[in-house]
Length: 466
Image (cartoon, rainbow, N blue to C red; front, top):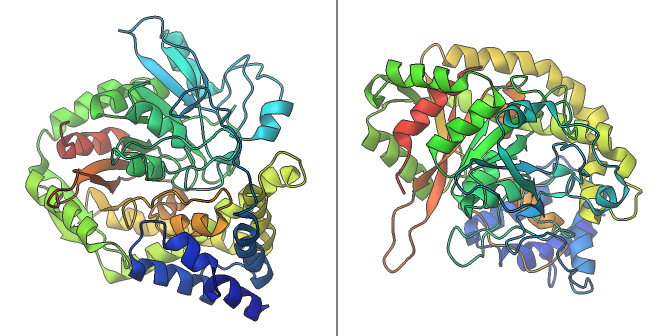
């Protein structure tokens, strides 16, 4: 078996070379990713890893691309209704969230054809309905929200215009939600975030995304991934004004709390930021974040190596819970025709994760939450990159399990979900290179539980005006 894995990764035309060489990731990071696969840093059983890696090798040349079933040219929407009033607030809703009378597809061909229309709205839409907000459509996503690149084989992959060349992944799972606000087709999108599914697309598309405190916003009527541990609903927008409006549609009275937070801290000088540095991050991204924090005048404190080690453990534990719960809730789809092979394999991994790591991870959750509370007695927020690199370029193949593993390893988000804290992804400009188009990376700002108003005020102070 080990010989087989080595052949797939390193052999002639091996996955490590064919996928990663075209991803836009620098050679050193590609080598690290291939090495990680060989050393099984992803805690995947050898037989499962072999299956994952052989899939794209065997199928990438034989799969005929299928036409997109999305309804807009940028593939952001699965259903779309042009707004009747151009001056009224426009809301896009991730197709993981029930809208009465519409099928919730969860980004899946199988569910789009077999799910009945929802009999009522998800509870998180109640305020938007009561205020007469225009819901312009349901947005695209990765199938069952279990992968992170943003690719969707049936509805097509939403087009990310971050670099003006449409080469970067949109990020997932809330890929269409991010592209909808990036392209101006919606003022606000509602997404979901179980392990980074709002913040990763926000980072990839250069928009703002808020992961809310676990339990703050109802997930009744939302397709479940980890409803008892990790699932959250939150807004995405192009600017802070609309992000605040989006949060006010999810939590009554939020706009007033935000105004109070702005009045309490009108400038950055009184806000303490704990800066967390993680191994493997592109130094240019760390530099861009440090420059932005210094430019705005925040009081920055470097956090300890001990916290970094605990963060790494929390990332592993969050992953075990997310994958284990996905298997518990979605394993009934692994034998259904119309569900993608990549999706089936990711869900099936939970059958390995659940008995081996799930319960032990949950036993460590309270300790991680206590650790963050201790940190927040010394600082107001924690800052680190949302992703360790700029978004990879889209791979040239339909089957992309190895690529999904690479993108998964670039995110710095799961530890936040495991704690249940709120976190904001906000664009930060990268240093402009000669003759290159300006581009942004993403700063992730983490706050104490239920600190969304204060978090968005800090985001307001960081926001780069367009």
